[in-house]
Length: 103
Image (cartoon, rainbow, N blue to C red; front, side, top):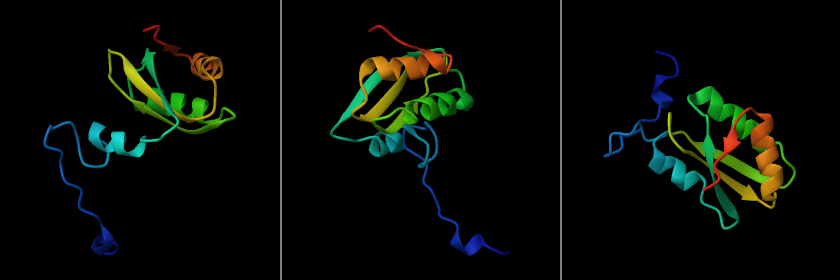
């Protein structure tokens, strides 16, 4: 079969939270940065919500990367690396239709 010989095997995580490429442990490794700031998010329910917020925040001047850890029905987490200020990040999240938590 064409192309199958280059497929990469991804192991399942021990916690059962998903495959090796999209588990919370894998996400934590991607977002590690000396200048990363963590925010709580409300209103996210699916992958499309995650994409919308990541795209809006990544477009902000001073943001190097934006990663969302989705917790459907709960407090999701946004990690932003770069030099963008809190108000600018909040405005980007709000313009995408979501909100930062106050705590």
